Image (cartoon, rainbow, N blue to C red; front, side, top):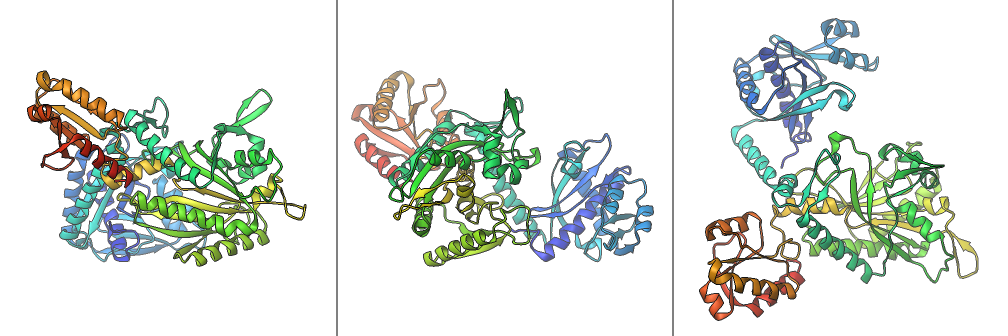
Length: 583
């Protein structure tokens, strides 16, 4: 899907269309006031104060009609430059524009754009006339707090998109419909994966039986991979003493992303936002020799971070999530081999899980930022040089991103491009010289001296929650056999004559390790077949007279109308082969 914000021509067109939207709203609702109307990746929006009027989706066609009327009238769009006093006078009585003006630097050039009887504060640029905004569509309306602050008034945000021709608009709208069908929030509800209820709390998902099966499959998959590579798994508490995070430095650098502290007797605790401080303490509990290193500590760990309600999105962005986390304690000489091992594991997992659209980014510090990053130039230079050398030696292309490092060290992020929405980091590996020093971690070297280990922070599944969201959207919910919560659904043609055989077959397949259900509802065969397809179950078995008589299986693959008859032992071999190949 095209990024409208980054396309210079579409950016100007969509920003002009945002003003066309505001112009039309002002005609229809004369008391309307406007906050901002920026261009975004998917088009544009405008935040509007309509007093007591609450817009719904049903109001959008009427606004579109007025927008088309203004567009056809071919009103010239004129730029005006204003002094601060002129701007304050022009927008007097409008608290939103006055706020914008008062927050501008003294050197800012204040400009406004006028089209017929509508004028709005704006930097521009804009199209020359309203006639250019012909092919647009208003997409949806939602609530948005003024300045994104829940303490402020709730405004109404109207989203739209604009193109230069009807074909591009229609193609884009078709892509939006495709995105809706892939949205993991929709699929999660339809397939019984998870539940989100405000009574429990925003951003706090509850995994239903199907979702918990999926969760366990991914957890076991990655844990088994790690065990084969020498990782030792631990279990640590989901909260910690504030002193722990003051020691690690997270309290100073990460406090705003943490939930508030809870005082219990003479201690203060916070919900754990990450696992590294706990793992540092585990390492420090024993004396270590260079012969033991590397030590790879791993944990499937529940963490909690404060996210504003506006940033929450299904299970992709939540307030509690589960990290597939690990910390590798090694010598400086082992950094390269251990880092390469992490990259090798990432590539192995991506190949098996058919994750193909991704790229690597080196997240480095901004040397000018003296607040965000741990103040040790020598440490940073050493860590960043080591990371670049490793990536160059491996021969994998990467981009450098200044200012994206963790506060304690640079990192490698693997950015995946999902079927819906913007790319995000799925996997990461970070080099850390800082936390081992802060926790006074040591090991005894070959010459008997004490040295400080280096720590690699790494996560293959940044979070299992986000991985589930990614996979649902990539597959439209049609999960591969190895991940499907129910792999086989057995349907008797006649409940009276065929149900017993179906139950025997279910037990046989359960004994073989498959996830099986029997549809014994008193419904028509056609209804059961449609329901099996709707639930996106990979294999639907239809059992009638011939199957009972011959002891065979007739199955239909999801999305297929063809029925295949096969011996049950051959069917078991077929499924085992697909599962082994992660298909």
